[in-house]
Image (cartoon, rainbow, N blue to C red; front, side, top):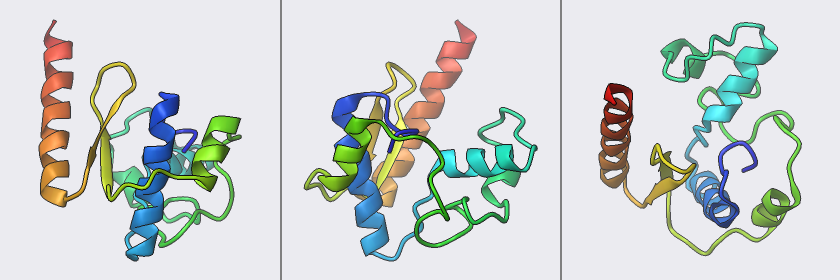
Length: 130
């Protein structure tokens, strides 16, 4: 939660996504876990979209393992701890950054999520072209 959410009010929603995914037997697919695993291996290249990172065999990479990572990947602040203890009552299963203000779009279905990912990519491309 700490590494995913910048906006305090979104922490409870991020926590809800993780709880909901785990309850359904889905992988967490949390980007900061593969970043941590790559850094631990001394192989982080600052390329979040490098597919090698998502496939990295590591007990911390939640794209590779089911369930929770083997241990913490960051020091959690109070707001993140509270969010983990008291997640929002929401049925979201996905989230992706909006590309502005550290905010996220939360989605209930994979198709909603894919549309949000496409919007994020368009937004990033527009920012790069400015």
